[in-house]
Amino acid sequence: MTRAMANAPAVLDGYLQFSGALGHGALPAKTREQIALAVGQENGCEYCLAAHSAIGKMVGLTADQIRDSRHGTAVDPKSDALIRFARTVVATKGRVSSGDLQAVRDAGFDDGAIAEVVANVALNVFTNYFNHVADTDIDFPKAEPIA
Image (cartoon, rainbow, N blue to C red; front, side, top):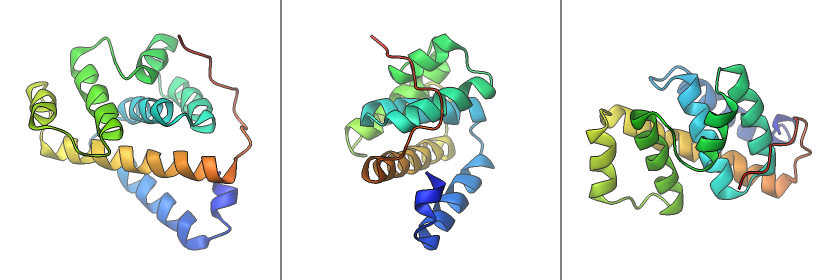
């Protein structure tokens, strides 16, 4: 994917800076991967599902957590609220309701965490769409089909 982005150095630089900045945010790597899986599933990005399933395993997600994330859920109630919110952001194109925001706040997340979820969704929508346009070859093991 980054090889294709390198055709436009500004695009690659923007992606790397945005991704790097979010890597230093408050959301842990596991959560960022869960968001990436939920967004990738929602957008049908086979490349991102393969990549984030592999990366998710590397940061400690179990096969069940990867599957649940792709379904937009989690067993842990706090993670579940965050992943559901991320999927809602995608499904509504950012037009979430006050109830959606309240649900994620009631789960213990502040406006900073909400902002990071939106940013992670945006980053992943970008990579999903980029991979669709570029028809990026999948260089990770393909993601398992889910029911």
